[in-house]
Image 1 (cartoon, rainbow over the protein chains, first blue to last red):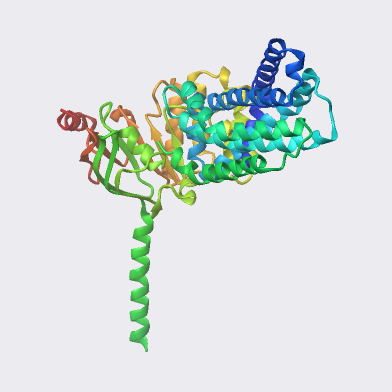
Image 2: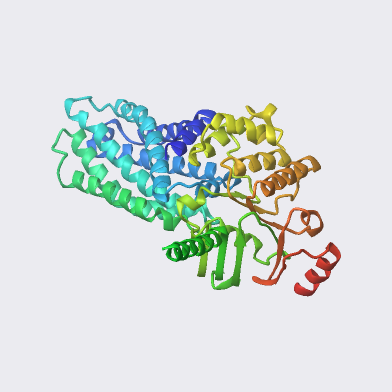
Length: 217
Length: 254
């Protein structure tokens, strides 16, 4: 598992494609909304929260697609499957690498978004990294699984978002609600946060258990 | 007392002989079938391959050679039938550690250097003394001077040589090669053949698909012809001459 993680980090250090493209896309999405909405609208927690997650979902999708392309070139994914590594461990390695890259991007994009939206930094925002991490974990688990299915199909670039986006709806709704409550300084650890955590647990376990079947040709 | 000891020794010897025989079967395929989207690709494939055999699989395009090798490499699962490698299911991790696969594609990351690619595969296979082994393999395939250049800039022949180093890095006991000499320059072909001869000397088991019987004949101890997903012919103890083989091949694949 560590060998795959080491290789993914090395590939990113060599190409610098994944983090940079993710960062640029996330920033562009936020800028488009900043220009499109009025300053009053931007200061509403509901808008800020939705904007943060729209940027994360689309940038994350690009990141997962990029990872897919790297594995697909020279059919390296097959080389990975030839290795004596348990498929569950392959899933965890790919999942952790997706979590890592998205976290790196979000660590820059989230504070920048809050600053651009003019939202005040307050004590209540201390929970934001945790909520973002929960969202990233669920997104990466589902994204890794869908990418493994899509990599075998001919129209993989289209199949991936078509599969991933509808399945992400519960995560997206929960994450927007929790982040909205956080930005508004309200209680955020209620039902929606539990939905978010449940989504993470469900898809990490499903990914780990089913990856071996999914990657079979 | 002496008779009892003799009987015990005989029983032990018989058991050991049976055990040795069982251990010598590297590959056992029984009634294998593989279908893709209801189209049969392999049907009724049965064969056994002992340790230290070099088996050439011949057949026209679409005969099922690659599918058979992919089944053996656990990249595919049979639709029905039984397949064991070293007495266990081919998908078992301990079995996969003993198998080396050289396919049509190199499975090498183009943005990584040969050293980095081999380090990744070496770590995945838990190769002991990895640095030394990598240096040895790169020297073996004549790429030691290119060890820090990204694979993206390699020619087809160089990439295939590196792929050979990748497949042999963990010193597999069963080496599967899918048309390994396709598109290679003479130097790469000679390196490949030297590697196969070395594997043969070391009593490793090799299975390779090829279109060129004449060139692979020297290496093979056995041959089989696949046609339309079935074994059309299997060689006996001795291989036929190239001329006889051409006649056989023509008759089998008509």
